[in-house]
Length: 209
Ligand SMILES: NC(=O)c1ccc[n+]([C@@H]2O[C@H](COP(=O)([O-])OP(=O)(O)OC[C@H]3O[C@@H](n4cnc5c(N)ncnc54)[C@H](OP(=O)(O)O)[C@@H]3O)[C@@H](O)[C@H]2O)c1
Image (cartoon, rainbow, N blue to C red; front, side):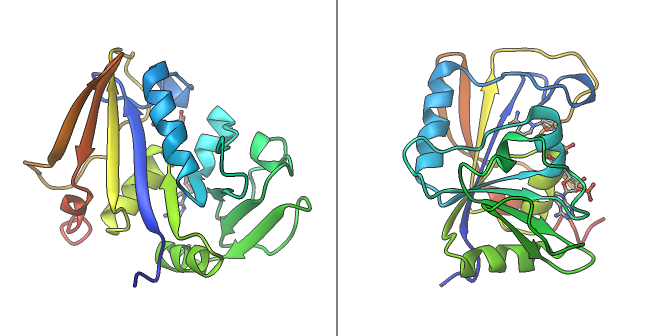
């Protein structure tokens, strides 16, 4: 049995490979049909994780529609995000994975110390011991890249939206080495294409840096 959650990565990119507008500006890339798929994915998971910059730039609610117990999870090593974001509103449990402090911001916030420097594997183990058996990672670029490089992703879905964005935004996770034959499945959707990608191909990128 895995000592970490079964982890699904879901991202949406433009046709030219951007996941955000210039300087990280939030852009809706998913079509309504794709959002419906993402909501079902959220419902099937015990927690939804993003990196600190995604909370700061996008202020997502990270809510599942049908699973009232799903945790909202952010990686914020220095705990300097602040409390003015939707995920800190106490309506559901929020977990802050960090390297800095233990503490509480609200009755529904749990701080988990994950080593200094931040140890991603330890963070995943800590989530598993807290009952997060199935985890959804929703970005951004840095967080997704680290998860892939450490071979912590079990399923990877990439929606390619029918949109071209200006240069200067965050990009889909890339790699240090060339990778081919990574597409496991393709489906046409309204407003774009859904790709299922082999996440294990990213393993080995760390060694070759
Ligand atoms: N289209 C999509 O699917 C999608 C989804 C989500 C987000 N986005 C976009 O992505 C942008 C943000 O991407 P981003 O790459 O700038 O940021 P990010 O991945 O959201 O957050 C990165 C930050 O989180 C912390 N962190 C995450 N993983 C870590 C690890 N393994 N070890 C240590 N620290 C870790 C670090 O904080 P510290 O700097 O404090 O160390 C890091 O700088 C947003 O603008 C958003 O619009 C797009």
